[in-house]
Amino acid sequence: MNFIMIISLVLITIVTLIMMLASILSKKSIIDREKSSPFECGFDPFNKSRIPFSLRFFLIAVIFLIFDVEIAILLPMIESLSSSSIMSWSIVSVTFIAILLVGLYHEWNQGALEWSS
Picture (cartoon, rainbow, N blue to C red):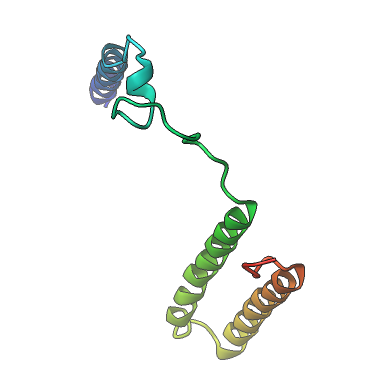
């Protein structure tokens, strides 16, 4: 048992050192302004390449992620129906869907679901 543990630690150390060495060797040492720019056509870009994105877009993306996770939670509830009592499953399902609807109503009231304003 100790022999396997020692070999594992040696292998982990060797792999870590190899990855660190590869990272150091592959680092770009010469910084060229032309190569760092997003356009490599020989002319300066007309405007900034890193323009800030809309806060509304960020909010819509977060709302999408939240509801996407909630759907991922809802789908296994159908599978758990056969292994639980109908009463407890119904209470949990209705409570969860009510929380989702209250959250959706709140987002709607706050105006986060409107594209133009």
